[in-house]
Image (cartoon, rainbow, N blue to C red; front, side):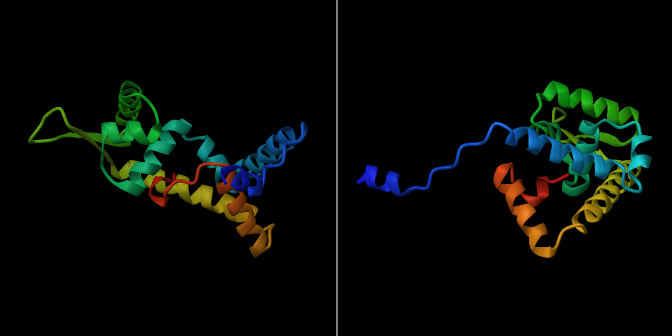
Length: 161
């Protein structure tokens, strides 16, 4: 019975040798276009690493978080998250708040400056994405999104930065 079910399951076609390179070139072109969109150059002047930007974006969408939650989201060790938050505290983008009940518990909050920067980064990325998507018809846009989700990680909306 199991062998019959397996024989009915469609097999994934093999990937041609040149397909991964074509995919990389297409992704590179897409990201290059996004980096040249209006407003993107202004982000290059901001001295924020991609990792810092991702953390700021997540905190902006999620709200205050435990250090361990930030480390889990970023998929980094807690010690690396601590270094990341240290840099963001120095830049006055986030602040730490210790729990009154248990001083070992630390929540990370965005400062008003961190909220503004995160929103600015999101606005620029959304505008760049909009410019790229305008080159496609509505059906093509939906197909592209579906294919990217199928090929990669499809996070819950709360985890998107």
